[in-house]
Length: 94
Image 1: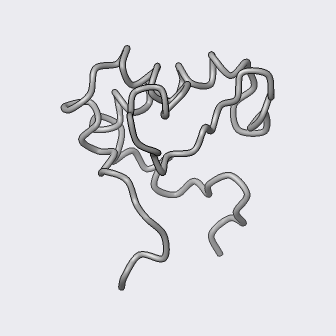
Image 2: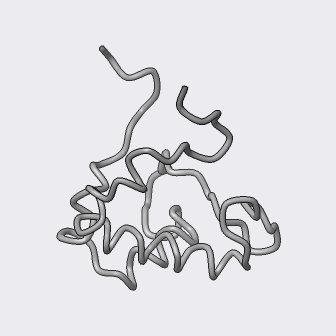
């Protein structure tokens, strides 16, 4: 089935391919590193406390949490908790 939107690289390889410090700076401002327009949105605005229902904290703390999760993802991908937990804004499995 074709993708409905553009997709990024597989995140399960992030820990092998990316340095944690670079990943954190990239998520903070994806456009900063490129001379062309990136499709990655600015998800963590500096002065907008978004996603507080998922992870309470400042944008910097949220970025660090996502970075840490990406770096640990290969180790935790098979955890039952992550496989059966509904994502933010979704209804639980029926």
